[in-house]
Structure formats: C-alpha cells, structure tokens
Image 1 (cartoon, rainbow, N blue to C red):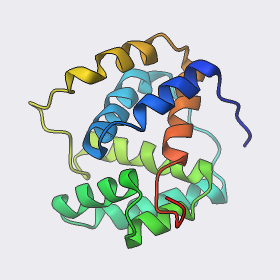
Image 2 (image 1 turned 90 degrees about the vertical axis):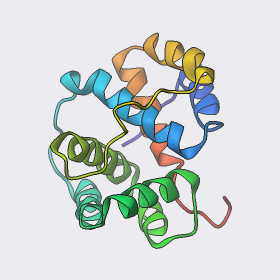
Image 3 (image 1 turned 90 degrees about the horizontal axis):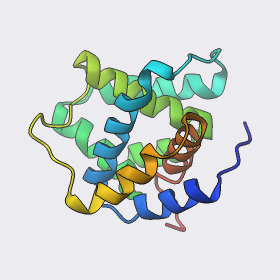
Image 4 (image 1 turned 30 degrees about the horizontal axis):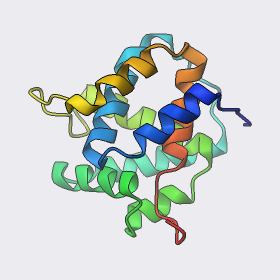
Length: 154
C-alpha cells in the first residue's frame, strides 16, 4: 500500500525519532488510545497475517521479555524479534503494533505503567500530533513503525 507523508507528518516523525524507546512506545500507546474508535478493520491479507504471527510470538514471552522485544524493535537493536520485525511489510508492521495495543488492553501484553507520565519535552510533539487529521495520524503511525526494527544500515 502506498502512502504519502505530508510535511507535518514528516516533521512529527523527525521529532518522534529523537525520543528514547520507552517514550516512543508510550506515545504509540497513547496515540492508539486516541484514535482506536475511528479505526476500521481492513480485510486480512498475507502481509498482515505475518504481523499476527509476530504478535503470537511476543505474547508468549514474560512481561519483561515482551517489553524488551518492543524496546529492541523501537531502538533497531540486533535481536531476533527486531530482525523478524524488519522482514515484515509496512502493513505487517502496522498490524503488529495494533495487535500489541489490543493486547495491552486485554492484558496479554505488558502495559505502560498507570503512573507513567510522558516527559515534558513531548508536550509540543503531542500538540503537533493532535493537530493532524485522522488520515495524517495513520500516516504518521505507519511511517514511525515502518522505520523501526533492525537494519544493518541502522
């Protein structure tokens, strides 16, 4: 699926990539919570099924290992999960993150701690994201998760 990122999305992505892995994970989670009611399930295809396979592997891990797998993906660490993630299509990567968010809601995946507060340096970024329309937010999320994972060039 082709998608085009607007300048606002590109600017937001540049800022997002400067945050540490835990902040990125929290921002993805809070972003999902903000738009989940507007998400429409797409017809399943083989690319997205691969995201489901990766999710099934993550949910079998202990909570500490689940968090580490997500951190490794966000940081681009050379780890088995990060390498597997990198092999997914853009749609498969997005599907994995949506499944992880749903898994957090259901209790299958480790959650952001209830007392977690985003660092103050994210305030401006959050306002930028809130100013984007729904389609731009989806494009931002797809772009952000597409750049994650291990790559020898990372």
